[in-house]
Length: 386
Image 1 (cartoon, rainbow, N blue to C red):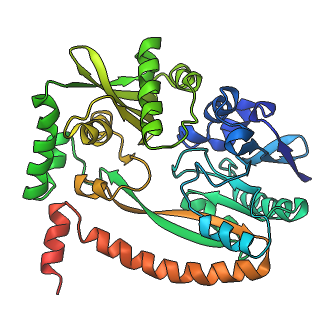
Image 2 (cartoon, one colour; image 1 turned 120 degrees about the vertical axis):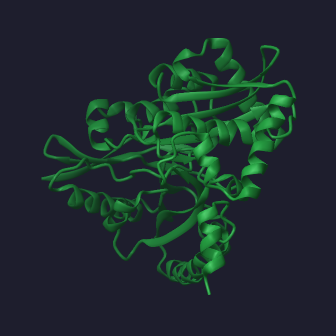
Image 3 (cartoon, rainbow, N blue to C red; image 1 turned 45 degrees about the vertical axis):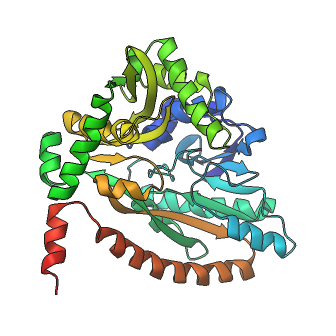
């Protein structure tokens, strides 16, 4: 008999059982990552997050789960629903709180309906999606949102859910490049020279860069990376929500899958970028700098990451949300997916019509972006297209 349960902390769910269902090589949906966010104070009601994880049980056996939060705002999500919230509230309703199934503060594609890989996986995913919709109605929330889900999760959602897509810039080693020189060779002459020039700028400024595994960092180096992160958020007027203890946690539980690219001048750390890696993908997360050095952002956040992927045979690199400047550096537009359930039928119908128009524009935007690909193969295809 299948039953659903909610949990106010992931610590109430057995880590081995959770990770068995999440088995995907994606660190962001691991029990250790999500538990670390809760335990180190990154998930708190003051920031608009309250855990309410949903699990599916067959008698006493955990067979499926999803990371779920009650959200009092739309910060830290990267799938923007501000206009929906405004429309709901202008109509006299309360858009917040709402449900969010996602990885907090991380616009990273991955599994959301965690159901392992068995003969009933599809059924369990569909039951989770239906259960989330029914739970939203039963407790009277405005909506439920499932963000940055992978494509094989999408079939679990029925027509009551609204489909939304966007573009992210991601790098893929689709041609078997062995090293950075191979990667450069696939680019147009103009882009190849531009990247060489950018990489030389940091070296010419007397800056040395290194890419380190989190397990090799001492506490002072983790403190330095966290300070760079908070400094950048403060400069931009945003609230830094990840704690120093969470950074330390990443190094402890993911010693070989957390990474920091540091820039040093005369042994002093002046900039850094934080990464995580999975089975086949590198994920870029946060960066910060105490000095403005030409080309240093591109070197730490992109080129060091590409070089790491090539050295360690990782085929994908997701450097984070947005950023048109990534395109010229080898990160091509890649479609992302989300699903949304809006309880009010009239608003749901209005949003559905809006999303249909948005999707047509999105397709055109994707073609426009690809027309600016830095790869020589794409340039040749454009040249020969009638």
